[in-house]
Length: 306
Image (spheres, rainbow, N blue to C red):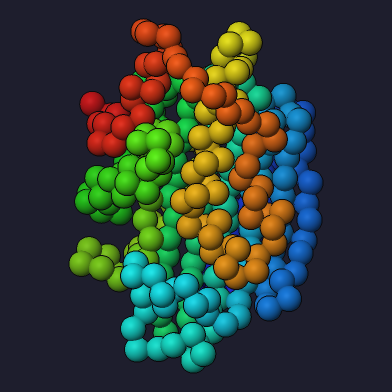
């Protein structure tokens, strides 16, 4: 297909539909509720939220396509600096899908995916996105499966992409004030356009494959772990780990910041937060416990595949 903002928007809407169908089928009970919304400054979105399922406690597959004056923070922050133009001279268009799934069971991991496209009236454009996994309990076998799937997607396009984007995810999904990663990482990339390896069209094909990979990966992890029994203590640990997830999303997440800075829809922006979370004062795990084992592996640079 010709790559235009209209064709990208249509493709993302179709992806949203297919992902929702896959998740509903594996959950077996809950259905997504849909809400369409408009943004006063331009554009809008289609929010799909699922709650109180057999497997999924709360989740969202959110589509948006917004436009308007380029937000000032893109010109103020060094990592987003855009030279040669000013906010008053440019407009932007941004579209994407953002997904977060919080499961009922502490033995099923939280998952997040975001793929996004951004362009400006001055000709600037880029792709961004990634998938990361946040197990409440880290299981090496599941971590290997997850990272092998992502490596396969990356290697299809360029052998440098998995190690580069895995390191980027380790660095990005890091809760600095806790000195721990949010989970086992995954891949993360931003401002992907034409580079020394692939042109924009080739990178767009990679971006699409990342989006397509989500449903198969997570349905497999749901199916494997959804019927395993768990204890009240494990459920309490899940709530504590959800608290860490909230801390990251409210303090560090760039998507949250972009949504707030561009007057996005608050319900959609904060969909990523769980229905329930917990913060216990000075909680300590028991030595050699499953909980401590998980904390020991919340580090950057782990080779999950070998």
